[in-house]
Amino acid sequence: MLRMRFYLIRPQLSWGVRRTILSMTLRQFLGAALLAISSSAIAQTDSSSHGRPAREILDSLKGGRLRWARAKVVEYRIQSHADCFCIYSPDAFAKQFPLLTIRQDSVIAREKGKRGTPPSPEFTIPNLFDQVEEDASSEGRIIDQLELNPIYGFPIRYKAHDPLVPDAWLQLQVDSFAVVRHR
Image 1: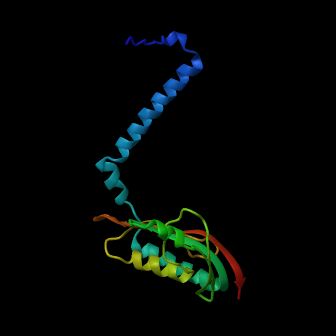
Image 2: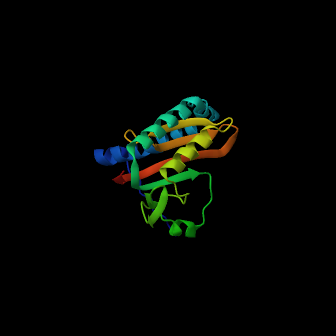
Image 3: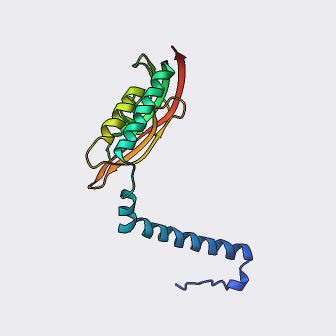
């Protein structure tokens, strides 16, 4: 069987086709370069060398708790999730109801919320404060990020890790929050 091959000569290609080929080649090169840089030992150890001191985090949490108490929120809706190096079964995703209505620090309603969030504990605002404070107080913990709600003072994003145990990282995030009633 005779095979026929067709070869294209570069000048025969239109400028648009040549530009597309060049951009595809450039994308592949940049993707490989980014992968090589991010997987190097320097990139991995450098990220763990930064962090905020635990004392600073605990002081911020104390101020946030004070703002939360002054707001006198009686009822609110919240969706949050914790992310860690965890393994979940497929039915754990189906069973979760992460959008909570909370009155007087008790969950009174659960609903389906934002899709795609990992299964996680049900956090009330006081639980979020407690979880962040407990984690930030752990020996050897490096806190990468803490963001507090600018009005109510509760943690909306928290990231921390342990440089000696690569899989011991934690991320907490509030996906949505709404006040239903003030006191």
